[in-house]
Length: 486
Image (cartoon, rainbow, N blue to C red; front, side, top):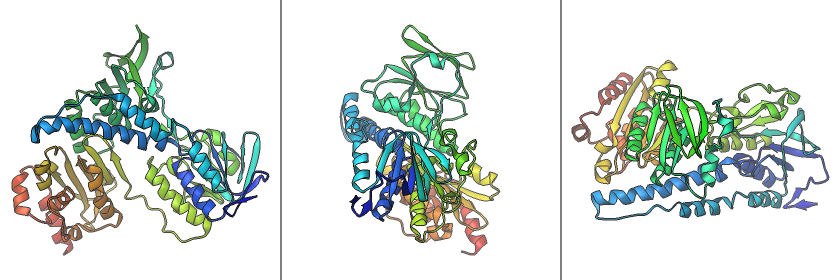
């Protein structure tokens, strides 16, 4: 039997490719291979499409959009007139249920099978180099196996955690109603985004962050701007603190910190990151290390002959767009097509707090630790022309330039359009564009992206320094350009 020219594998234990994990990237790769006429068996333990469409990127950003609208209505008073809103969680909860199809992957399964593939829900495990068993059945791949099994939430070893009904961030996404108060363990991207969402819907939010700042993987200037916004949203942040013990008390949860302080809340949320679960995959049967933290891959995403890996399991970055990028490389490799080798020096990431934090490449600290001699420019968005006009202009642009080459090797844009400004910066880092070339561009005026031009001295140099007395780095960039003769 064939569908769309593809041979069905219902009665055949042999296939061309086995996709072990049909999340967003696994589904995308499967559909590419099916469209190319290959037999594909997809094995997924949970929902086809993975975390992103059901619990991650899409529903959480819809929630962020809803809360930003609420906040913008408050800002009307400072520029436009009077406006009032009344937060109603039921509205966004309904939209999220619609977006996720009530957390059903029936549509994804139908897409997969209509293209001629076979989708099996279950835990797949290697029993040989190209053989995978699932639900008591065994499949062998002629071309190979792709590992795309994603990650699971990290649950920290907090005493008493097994005695309370804690939430992960998935539970926030599915919540039909909200508690009056909650404590979030973890001030990374997800904890920060959802913490701000809930605070703007009236929940008393406390974040416990073991590091010295929230978003500690980002530039310090980014953390500072986000913490200022949290203070405005009445979010309490305990920095340099760890949850030592939790216990139920009178229908509430008590979280005891390592400094002895006790926090009482209706809910406790664990947002301490995610990690691959490789031990259960039987990787040793395929000649791979099942005890490794991540699966090592080459520039074609090959982990071994006839085995590819992509997404979170490779440890490159736990971001959907990175997994999709890797999937395109694997598709080309399987189909015998040319594709540029993988490069990971310009991975963009956005934390969708308000203000947004967009970053790419090295932070200043990372660049110095990697041995680069850098010139750094920092420009407050409030002192750019568009920032002055926009009103809600809390933010900063920070650029990290390699003095030896003059190339931009890292950048951060914090602000109401931080993620969009990042597009220009990602291109510059990816293409290794010298700062002199970026200076020679004509930037649209007045725009947030034009703020990058202002930051590097592309235009309005005299005026911009007057508008921003704290502006730093222009002379450093001048020295870099002059030294390289550009």
